[in-house]
Amino acid sequence: MAFRVRRDNGWSALGLVGLGLAVGAAVGLAGWSLAQRRHRRSLFSPDKLKRLAALGYLRAHPSVDSARLLRDYLHWEPHPLLRRKARGVLRRTERALRS
Image 1 (spheres, rainbow, N blue to C red):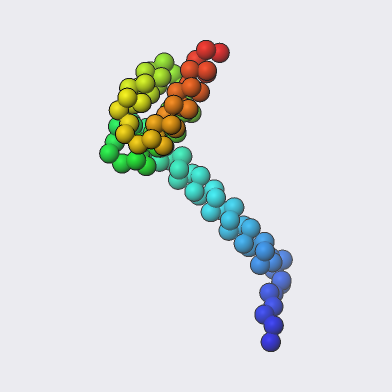
Image 2 (cartoon, helix red, strand yellow; image 1 turned 90 degrees about the vertical axis):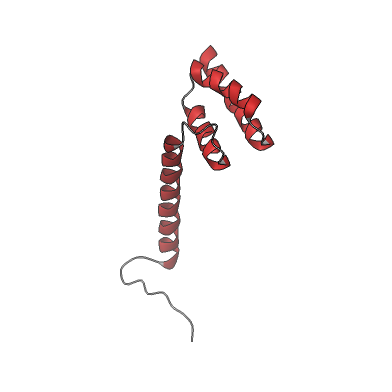
């Protein structure tokens, strides 16, 4: 006996999976954006994920104060991956301020 998907209402199994993926991606993106806003002042937090969220927030909001803060953060940050991410954010911020 083969498994059949009923198409009485116009929705196929593939369509429902696609819809589920799209909704999941949208919810995940909204959650990450909220986390960035919530942790924008958590750059020096003991939690690495909060520091990453703060870097994401600073990347989207370049300013002279952000550049100064990122320079201090680079001297403080012990984790090499977060330090590399911060260097990239600082470079991007400096480019945005020059133009």
